[in-house]
Length: 465
Ligand SMILES: Cc1cc2nc3c(=O)[nH]c(=O)nc-3n(C[C@H](O)[C@H](O)[C@H](O)COP(=O)(O)OP(=O)(O)OC[C@H]3O[C@@H](n4cnc5c(N)ncnc54)[C@H](O)[C@@H]3O)c2cc1C
Image 1 (cartoon, rainbow, N blue to C red):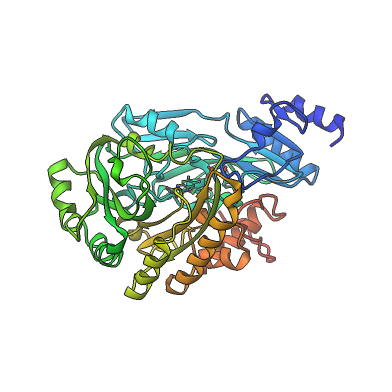
Image 2: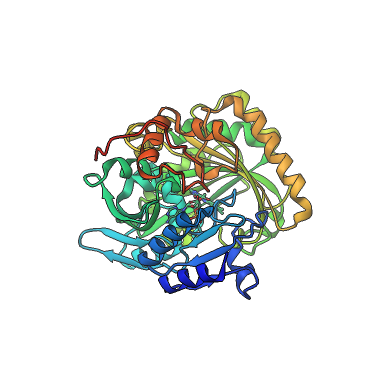
C-alpha cells in the first residue's frame, strides 16, 4: 500500500492502524486458534462507528480483501486474512444495560465476559456461549448456542436490533420493522451482510444457576449416551446439560485419582432453584455408576467462564461439526469408539441440546435453518503443541466421517472450518436462496467474503424493505 493512501486512511480514523513491521503487528494479527497464521497488509483497530465506515470505504475503494474481527475465536480463522485489510473491533467494548426495559446494548467488539459482567450486576443475562472469551459478534451472527438455549432460545432469538455498516460504507439500524430482510439475514447468516457495530439484546432474569458435571467411566458410554438422548429432550427447559467426552484435567477442583482419566459426562446448568434442579436431573445422574457427580449454586458468569482457563488463546484447534436430529444406537456405538480415542487432554466432543425454545422459532423465521435438530455436535481436536497437529486433525476428521452419515446433513456455521460452498449451503438449506438474494441487495460485490460465504444471487433484487 502506498504511504499516501495509508496517510489518507490515518487522517480518517481515530483508532490505531497497524502495519507489517510495527512492534504490535504480530500480537494484533494473532487470533485464538494458533493453527491460523495470516498476515494482513493493514489492521485498522476501530474505536467507533466512523472508523468502521472509513475502513470499509477504504477497503472497497482500494479493492482490498476485507476481514472483520470480533472476538477472534473463529476456528477457521475468519477474523483475519492474508494481504488484505482487517477491521479489528476489539477496542469497541462498551456495554449499556437498561434494567427497566430489560435490554442491553453491546458494542460489536465485545466478548461475552464483557456482557456477563455488565448484566449480572442487575441479575440479568443474555443467552450466550460456553466460553466467555468468545466474541459477541461472530457467535451472535452465526446463531449462538449455550446453557440457556433450551429455556430462552439461541442468542439470535434474543436479538432486538443491530447497528450495521454496509458494504457501501453507509450505516443502518435494523430490526423487525427497519430493513427486516437484513435483520432476518443477520440472525444466522454470519458476517456476510455488514459490520455490526452494536447489538441490542433482550435480557432474562438469570443470576445464579445450579451447575456442575456428572462423569462416568468410558466403558459406560453406550448406556449413558442412550439415556442422555432420551432424557434431555423430555427434560423441563430450566434443565440444560451438554454431553461430552473429555479428559479430566489435573486441576485441584477434581479428585487426584481422576486426573487425566478419559470419561464421558454431562455438564449441567439449571436455572431453577437447587432442590428442583437436583430432582429434575436425578434420573439421569442415577444412570450407571458415576465417577463424580457434583453440582451446586454458582453465579452465571462463573459458569460461563469455567472452561476459559482450560482453553486459553494460543492452542492448536481443528473442528468438525454437524446437526443431529436422532441419535441411533449405531451412532452411539461409533461415538463410543472415537470417544475412547481422544488424542490429547484438550480434545473433546460435545453434543449441545438445541431443542426447547430454540425449536419454537420456525426454520424460515431467521436465517438459522436447523430448528428441527435436537443437538449441535462438535468434534474438536485441541493441543498446545503444533507437533500434534496431525494427530488432532486426523482424529477429528475420522470421527466426523464416521458420524456424518447419522447427522441431519448440515452443520452450525460457527463450528465449521473452511469446508467449501457445499457445506455452507447445507447449513442454510432452503434459506440459502433468500440469503443469496439479500446478499445481492446489500453486498453485490461480495466485499464481506471472509466468512462462511453466501454468494450474491446474480438476479438483481428490488429495493423492497
Ligand atoms: C473456545 C471456543 C468456544 C466456543 N463456544 C461456543 C459456544 O458455546 N456457542 C456458540 O454458539 N459458539 C461457540 N464457539 C464458536 C464461535 O461462535 C465462533 O467461533 C464465532 O465465529 C466466534 O466469534 P468471534 O467474534 O470471536 O470470532 P471472529 O474470528 O472475530 O469472527 C468470526 C466471524 O464473524 C464475523 N464477525 C465477528 N464480529 C463481527 C461483527 N461485529 N460484525 C460483522 N461480522 C463479525 C467475522 O467477520 C468472521 O467471519 C466457540 C468457539 C471457540 C473457539
